[in-house]
Length: 311
Image (tube, rainbow, N blue to C red; front, side, top):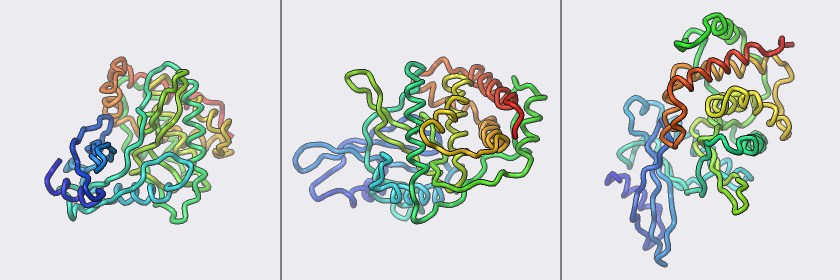
């Protein structure tokens, strides 16, 4: 750990506690994340998680992201959503070398394998319904779009006709929506699971709340759908929306609006699709080569555009 950051973290430890280890956690894209081992007075150990924004290209977003995450964790405290507890935040690097956030550590790990994906899709859907049911006393900031019709990057394997139609679709007016509390990056890489002795997974945590926003439930569902399509195949992207409604979630009653949000999110990842997939390969999904991921994205966009005529 960097000296100033270590000193800052130490201010939030209990009397007699000390940091004995810092282990880098993989899977993130925008920030450095470390698991801190704290030795308690009793000799037992407990864990904290430190998120620091060190990349110069992302520092100008750090304050906003940390404010969003700290506010979201405060909102979720005591709720049925298994999120970390906020310990401290230094969004402007007043004490640390870099903008940082300190939170509690949650048990479990990500599950990105194809095996039992049907079970996990239903669990993810139920968890997202619970997130959208949060009654935020302090409404988070409005959602931000990650791409526009003029900034979409056409993949090398894309069908130009299909993608042109998709771009035209998101060039149209934004559908009306009833806002809800959004995670904004809800996807398998940000959900922790534990496996019971019987082999049944259960969700133990939802992490990375830096994009917490106010907006349409369709947007969170669309984002998870895109990730599932790239991880497990295009059909799983379509399946997630159905699972969300089966779990009691509410999406737009206008099929054109549903298509709009799904297409917008899929196109938003086109410029960074390989960046998205890199942590998955690091986590063991070596089958997700650049060509496979790009082909799945193109197949998913085609599937969305081939959907029955919108009402």
